[in-house]
Figure (cartoon, rainbow, N blue to C red):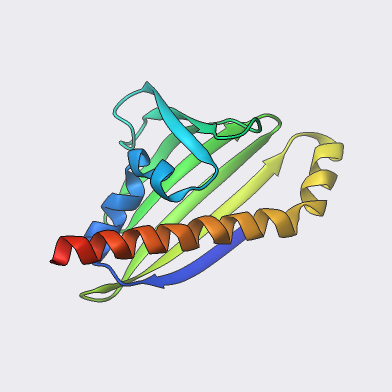
Length: 149
């Protein structure tokens, strides 16, 4: 099952990609994320592994950076209880000060029962994905504005 979100963001492509690729920024814009905990490697660098710890008890994910071709693309493999998520985020330069973020998440659930539950939860998953990307847009535009002044 796939969720895709595209948004145009008022920020320079290299700056936007760097902000997004740094997992230390994630708790500032992901409202349901308490913190990240490094497991191995420098967080955000290719091959690094870190834990995403939610604010409320719930699914905890381990993220592995599987692609890092900044300023064009970053990719993660998230593994959680009975699900893995292949995350691919692309940064397309539109103008000097505007970038399109294309975020795609592909979910793979274990077993027939969990696949059925995932299908039933598809609209909630897509809403959460959009909420996160819109929150990142606000975060990035605020950061870009403060860096320009």
